[in-house]
Length: 278
Image 1 (cartoon, rainbow, N blue to C red):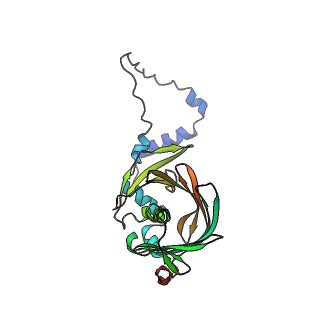
Image 2 (image 1 turned 60 degrees about the vertical axis):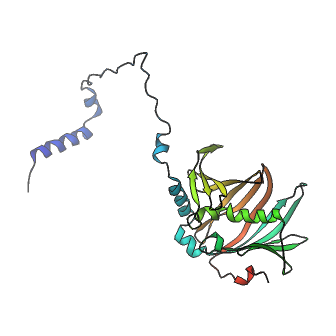
């Protein structure tokens, strides 16, 4: 066995430093203090960079978008499990005169290679009327199995769920959209990344993403000089995918819609006939 005298001495000193009583160490003369230079009046000490850690953790726009995709379930899992959606819930709509209408809704989605090849249908059941809005290469309405042309505001509201929703961010690559980073924001002590998404038709959506959780907490977009804000809460996992069960929509700071998911199922067969005009 090879013996190292130097290694033995080093280990011995290390053990003594641990076992030696504190009082013995205290009796040793302290090392001479090193003088600290005092800055002259013309020289000011450099201020620490409070944002140094944040700068080191800065995402590129694509990295942030991909991180969000992973948090919501990952691209492969989203494609496999989330190809179809069947969602039921309740919603309330605030009208221009301040009255509120309550309804039940059913949402069916078959996702294609990109949003242009998707098929969407949303059935809304109000106490006085039931109708459906459908996207299948174009938007049309169904009332008692008869096709009708929806009003412009109904079409705009329907399109906003497609083009200004979470789906648009989670499938930004598939849709050929680009992403840009904005300034970080802080609201009520919570810090957010801001990520702008611009699709191929120049529609722009700004997402506020929790720095801590990498979840989208709200999004913003403007249409016809009206600023819309959609807020998300009550996040839960459904079949491995992260879903906000409660959302609010505001138009120029006034609440116009509230939705609450009752059940959501992914991956089940959804009949193509639901999206036909006849």
